[in-house]
Length: 65
Image (tube, rainbow, N blue to C red; front, side):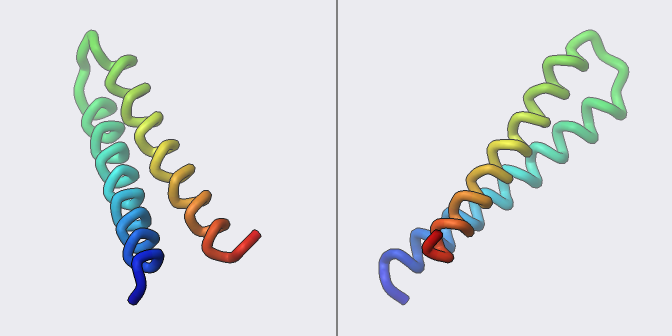
């Protein structure tokens, strides 16, 4: 495996980890009744969006398009 393959694999792994952490934050914020619900929910949704965006860009870059 060359350097680009390692970089791409690591990027995909971290993207999936960010998506998972964001989903955990969303689920936890929805299960609690707190005054900081909106802020935690927004952070979780943004984490999921960032992870999906990174994953999408890395997959498209890997196809050569």
